[in-house]
Image (cartoon, rainbow, N blue to C red; front, side, top):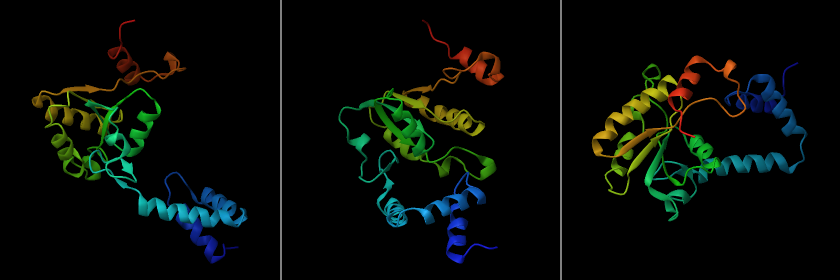
Length: 198
């Protein structure tokens, strides 16, 4: 038996979300259908507002409702350090760690020739423009530890070092609670390279 048209459309749209297959989409659609009357309306309003009210900060390209974003406007942030991340979700992950009090720059991707994404498609030009200020002393490259993330990090380091700005890379290694015997060779090698004095 086929889904009624309205339900089929919701399942179709939900299954386009990353990591959501048709079965999960159907389960979510049935949950929405069975929920209290106000829930579907609140959900649709929240999704519409998400798209209409969320924009990119004109300085760091984080997702925000105000421009510039609250982080760029915060006078308590250390303006001498910029942490460069691939996506806005990466910025949120670093912020949740409460270990960084500087500013950010979102590239909106990484260099990936196979996907047709070169430096021109990223926010590299805007980053270099921000580094013209004498205020910036260090750039922390916090791209993902993938082939694309590493290529992006190397590319950025080559561009930034001639500007007399320190370039550092986030450390990669063994997660807290992890066992050495289960770590892959690359992760273990990077953990040893990134060691620090106790």
